[in-house]
Every structure is written in structure tokens, then in C-alpha cells.
Image (cartoon, rainbow, N blue to C red; front, side):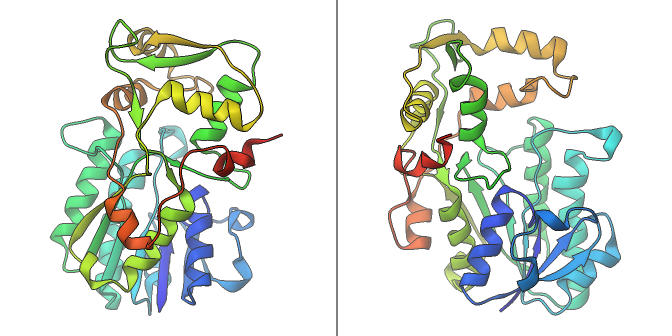
Length: 306
């Protein structure tokens, strides 16, 4: 099958390229000029240069494709550089749909996110509106809503690496957020899902007519609290770490003052979404990949070891 991939140079994109090629698919990837070195197995893909706001580049990438995967997403906006939620997570989807329809591509797989909604944060709303655009199109669609994704980032960034670098490696105690004023009230809970399982779910869905017209949750096998995730990361690198509880409200105060600075670790919207939790059932994932999903444990976190 010829598959067009929009968003193939990032963390999840690496694994999507590998999984698609391993499954024997022909892969066409849209690559922003200057980002060629970020594309794994570039010599085995059809590479098309351009941005997602270029109709010509999008059309060239999806030309001849049986299906298109839209995997562009950002956690933070940089408007001065033209990087916005509106452009990356909504308008890019709308333009990809138009390109696919123009060349006769029939199928689209959309990387969404767990907990998207409207009204919500700009991240949540643009993801939600992208889902609606896909549903309103004439394309056969499958939407994926993963919980937080982890796995070897191949030099990029993902949740476990970020927590290790910012909370486990420094000599200071790690911080465990909770939504209430007491740690026992409002724990932050997630269902970490391994990136390879997510990629395999996309590939499986390409040939699975049961997924057409469906929204699939992608959760790992366990729901874990923020402190437990920190403890498991520390164990994976052979460290013992003191974990101190902190109400998210305190961090929000700091974000209100400083999240406009690029180096500030989180934004107010990210903290809002964190407080809402991020759990998802593993049932769809188990059925799609035909195995038990990888857990957030020492063995699957071995890439964190220095």
C-alpha cells in the first residue's frame, strides 16, 4: 500500500516510518526544508519538501497514496516562528483532507489526543476541531486518541526523558503534582503507552475495515499516578529519589508569570490538561496490535540509562 505521512520527522513519526516500512508499505513523507536529517530511513521513502501550509507540497505527497496519516502536533506555540495550534493541528488537517480528496486518496488516519474537547485549551480545541473536519469529510477515517506516549526518543524528547532530565537527574527532590490541596485529593493519573505500540496500531488499522469510522483510545496497560511514574523512572536509572507533593495551583501561579519564556518548562494550558488526568483504556490497542501493550516499567525505560 502507498501511504503518505504528514509528520514523519518527530518522535512518533520515527516509529511510524519504521513500522510502515517493516510492514512492506511504500511511504511518502512531507519534510520541511532543513529537516531532512531528522527523517529516519530517508533513502527508503519518497521525500517531498515543503510545509503543511503549502497546498502544492501536500498534494505532491498524497498523490497516488491509498491512505494518508496526519501526525502533526505540538505542545507549545511559537507564533513569531509561525508555529501555532491553529496551523499545525487544525488547518493542516483541513488542507490535507482537501489534497487527499483532490487526488482521489480514500483513507485518512488522524493522530489526535486523549481528552480533546471544545471548549477547552487551544491544544484541545484544535485537536477536537480537526477530528470534526475528518468526520465531516468524504474520506474513510480512523482517529486515534493516545494517552501520554513514551519510548526511546532517538535523540528527540518524550515524557520519560523530560521527567528524567528535569526531575530525576538534578540533585533536588522531584515534584509530584496533585490537583487538590492535599496529595490524597486529586492525584494526576495517566496511562503511559509505548510509542512502538502506537505505531503498530496505525499500521494495523490500515488493513482493518473494522476501524473505519471509529475513534480508538490508545492507553497502556496501567493507570499510574505522577509519583509512581517518577519512582519508576528513578528505578530505571538506578537512583533513589525523594518525591515531594505540590498542588498544581502553585505551579500555575509560576506559569502565569513566566510561561511566555521559551525555557519555562510548562505552560498554564499544559498544567490545566495535566490536572484533568490522561487515562485511556488499553482495549482498542490490544485488539489492534494483537498482544499485551508494553508497560511503563524498568525494562521498557532502559533507554534512560546514561
